[in-house]
Structures are given as structure tokens and as C-alpha cells.
Amino acid sequence: MKKFGKRLYIGLIFLFLYLPILTLIVMSFNNNERTSGVWYGFTLRWFGEIFSNQDMLEALINTLVIALASAVIATVVGVAACVGIMAYSRRQRRIILQLTNIPLVNAEIVTAISLMMAFALFGISLGMGTILFSHICFCLPYVILNVLPKLRQAGSSTYEAARDLGAGPVKAFFSVVLPDIMPGVATGFLMSFTMSVDDFVITYFNRGAGINTLSTLIYSQQKRGIRASMCALSTVIFLVVLLVLLLRYYLGSKSSADKTVKGGS
Amino acid sequence: MSKKNKWLSAPYLAFILCGTVIPLLAILYYALVDKNGSFTLSNLASIAESVHLKALGLSLLLALITTVICLLLAFPLGLLLRKSGGKKGFVIFLLILPMWMNFLLRTIAWKILLQKTGVINTILGALGLGSLDIINTPTAVVLGMVYDFLPFMILPIYNVMIKIDNSLIEAANDLGASNFRTVKDVLLPLSMPGIISGITMTFVPAMTTFAISEILGGGNISLIGNIIEGEFLRGGSRNVGSGMSMVMMIFILISMALLNKFDKNGEGTVV
Image (cartoon, rainbow over all chains, first blue to last red; front, side, top):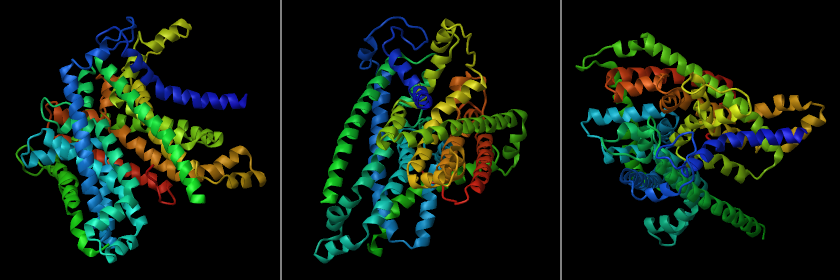
């Protein structure tokens, strides 16, 4: 009985977390233009409409382009920064890391309007450029905080060994150091991409007129009700991510099992 | 690696300067000047207007309630998940997965669920349990906040708890501690870093949101975030908005300082 109570508690919490997702998936099959609490019958129409809804396609492309570009730029700038930071004194390093933490601990709305005010102060008009810059700014800490510990762990001896054996600094970095810190770089990149796709507040304040990402488009529809095709698109994205994560989870748990075997031998 | 590499962090330092330092100074500047650019304290003082004061108070109250509810839900869940010995990777996977559906959409889904003729009321009605009439009230906003931020409370607590050595629990039991005492004197203190970072990750976004209150409050509920958003994007004054943001930041810093007093080890962890 006690065990049943525990299971029920865990089950209820996860039901709470997944209930809205289930609702949205059901809504994407509902035969009604906009979401509502009423069931109008089953249809697959909205999945077809994903490709004919111009506004939504544009928002989707914007979202993906911004996420990819800001994740790539943040990763390159961030990894280079980490290599540089290693050369600084302990005190300088601490100051840089404290500045790095600001966007992480600050309220999102404050980060958003602070950027907006800086653009206003320098007469920079809002548009794709300002969105991209803002996204790079809030992605960078995730790269730094994932890469720097790995770089510290890796130490400098392998790099120096490669240099002693005649490799140039660039070659030594790419063939010796980079493979060592790759897990951190990959995590930083993926977190940046995810944060960028999921961002609403910072984009909302720093986009120009007429530019939408999926988040801002959804917010603009919320009063009149979300279009069913938006639910359909989100359902597709959710299922694709679910599939990728499941694959990665199963392959990942398998390969980590391999690693333990290798480590033991 | 050699000192020669220092220049590699130059682009990043430029990003910190232009993307963090200058923007924060920009808010400070706008908060301290009026429309014509001359110095004033009236932007900061406008927090004393009753509408603003009410919004700030309500934000603090709802954020506090949300944080407490999240903590009360997450701590027992952490204990149960720890005991059940489920695979760590899979539990975290289940907690992170919902975040791949846009958070605005998930919040809007609650609007659909809570409507007067919505799914929940239909079920309650069919069971003869009356109706749940909370849409467009502060209760709905708290529900939405708890929903959106609960994973940020669960994840750090779970991450810390799963690392606690079982032998400590066994030792406590062997020495005659009851289950309750083991939780209170062993598990709770050892989970503190996770709890602290969970509170931070819940309280700050709850205190500053404007989207959740707009969606589930139906425009009736004005939090400090809604006030700031209105000043900037719906024809208010940027200067007043900047002033409100400074005041809000001060309240967040005070809350965090109070919280850190409880964090005896001073080592809150990020996830």
C-alpha cells in the first residue's frame, strides 16, 4: 500500500508535467482552425497545412537559422576564449568568470531590455542582426562553462608534447587538445542551440517589426487562440526530438557500457 | 598553454563588454535621466505609485508561493526517485523532454485545460465534483508558474540527492534514527546546495515573468514584468521602464542575499 502511494505520487507529478503536451498533441488532430477546449472531430489537415502557412514557415526558418548561427558563433568564440582565459592570471580569470555568470543569474527580462537600451543608445535599428547578437551573448556562458573545466582537466602537457614533437600551435590544438575537450564543446553547442530555439523574452524585445520566431509568433496568437497548424508543427518537432533523444539515450547507454568494459581491461 | 594565446579571448571580451557591461550601464543611464536627458530620480521613485507598488508586491507574493509549492513537490519527489533507484539518465530525460515543446504553447495548453468549458471542468462535471473556476485569477498564474519552473527545482535537487552515499543513511538508521529524523538531519542538509540552486532557478523567473501572467491571467493580472513590458513595448516610457527594472533587480539581489544566508556552505550549484 505504501509502495502504491509512492508510485502514485511520482506518477501524478509526471502526469502534471506531460498533461499540457498531451493536450497540444490532441489539439493538432482537432478539426478546428484555432485551439479550443472542444473536440470537433479527427483530422490530419493541419499537418498538411504546415507547409502552406507562410508566416509559420518563415518563423520556423528564422528560429532555426538564428539558433544554428548563434550556436556555431558562440561555440567558436567561446572555445577560443577558453584557450585564451587559461593564459590569464587566477585573479583576471575570476573577474572574467564573474562577468560570464551575469547573464545566467540575471532576470531574462532585464538582459533583454538592457540589450534593447544599448541598441537604442547607439542608434542600431532592431532586426535579424540584433536578434543574432543577443542570442550569441546569452549562449556564450553555456559554452564557456562547459568547455573551461574540460580544458583545465586536459592540462597542458599533451599540448606541449605535441609542440615538442614538431607540431605547430594550430595543428597541436586541433589534433591533440580539441579531441580531449570535445564532450564539453558538444554540450556547450547543444545547450546554446536549445536555449536559442526556446528563447522568447530576449527575441521579443530585440526583434525588428515584422520579424518573428516561433516563440514570438505563438505569443502574438495567444489571445485569439493558437492556430491548429502551429500545434501540428510543434507535435512534429516534439516527436522528432523524442526520437532523436531516445536513440541517443539507448546508443549512449550502450556505448558508455562499452567504455566501462574497455576501462576495466 | 602559452601566454601568447591571450589574444584568443579578445572576441569574447568584446562580447562581454558590448553584450553585458554596456547594456547594464545603458539601463542605469536611462533609469537616471528623463526624456530630455537631464538627471532625475523620478523614474526610480515611480515605484511608489500604487499600481507599480501593487504589481511589485503581487510579483513577490506569487513568486514566493510558487517557489514554496515547487519545493514541497520536488523534495519528496527527489527522495522517492532516489529510493526507487530508477536509472538516472532516464529520469533526467523524462524531466527535460517537456522543455522541447515551446513553453508558451505549454502554458497556453493550461489555458485550454482550465477554461470554464475546458477539459478539466468537463471531467469534474461528469464526476459531479463541481467546477474549477480559476482561469484569469492569480491561482491560475501560480499554477502556470509551478508548471513551468518545477523541472528547474526538481533537477538540481535530484542531481544532488542521487550522489548522497547510501552508507550515510544506513549509518543513521543503525544509530536508531527514525525515517523522519534521517530525512531531517541527514538528507535535508546534504541536499541543501541543490535546494538553494533550485530556489534561485524558480524564484527569479517567477518574479520577473510577464508572459505567464498575460496568458493565464487574461490581462487582468499585472506583475512587475507586465509593467516593465508595457513601459517598453506598449507606449510607455523607457525611462520609467528602466527605473522599474533597477528596482526589480534590487529586490532580486536582496532575496538572493537572504537566501545565501541559509546556504551555510556557500556553494550553490548550477544543475
